[in-house]
Image (cartoon, rainbow, N blue to C red):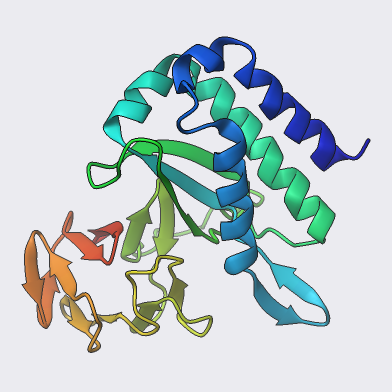
Length: 233
């Protein structure tokens, strides 16, 4: 029996246990696992030399009623769904750029029994290197670069202009159907600004739809169904 088969059997066994009382034949773990696999396949990016990179950070959204019903089992379910995605990645020989994570989230716009999966490829944080040698003389204070916070991950803004979108060519890629291929650009100068690049669903900063806007530390940016927080340093 392969890894994927073993994971599928564990998910099916949940139905005959405590989850049977929780799901009541509505939203079941096997259906969520199928949506995760579909999202994984749909968002794979070819990187050349036969390498295919899959998203590694997944959010499963469901109706508040389902989310409340699942609360007692959330940790176990998330862990087994994580195993299901990992098995699929292994079977398809995909590559991951960072640690695999699956989380559950409530979404007011979803009906009971329906789930929605969103994902992104988030690179692992750079491992700490050796401690630097002490400087013989004081050096100027280093200023941290601005960064974006998305799904708990820190994305540094290391260039003067960062394109955000769904396209593989975007500097920050978002696997969300509400995000346009080239959705918005963040520019760094004396101030940080964001510009909507003619997106279909618009760019929102602190609850207001904008064409261009200055970004302050803590500004909340909404692109399609993705929430991002800008940090100045």
